[in-house]
Length: 129
Image 1 (cartoon, rainbow, N blue to C red):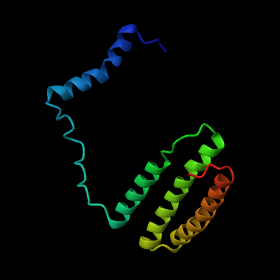
Image 2: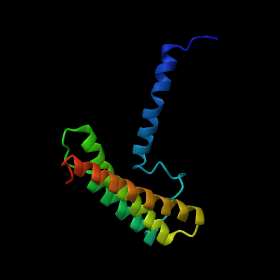
Image 3: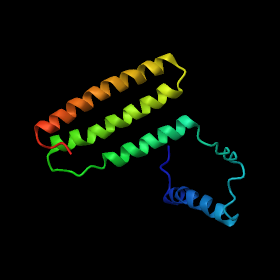
């Protein structure tokens, strides 16, 4: 088998640029064969609740760091666990699947227990905010 010549390699390397140029030449309408974007459906009540829980969790996880890896981990995990609880409560309110409902109930129970333990751990160290 022959080794590709430098000219062939250079020609192949220019193909992506040529494709981009062709799309620009057509006013950016080169995607005529692409499927049309699906219409955006409004969020269901469950989706809105999941989005709200997710936003709240991420906002609350933006903690003031102490410089102590242990304290910072625990302080960050509390809102993370609370986010899991909030999501599980959405599932309990909207889910029809018994397995999902069981997992959600388990999450609420276990994450609430861990949050209580973490708060107590922080309290003993004088680091509870």
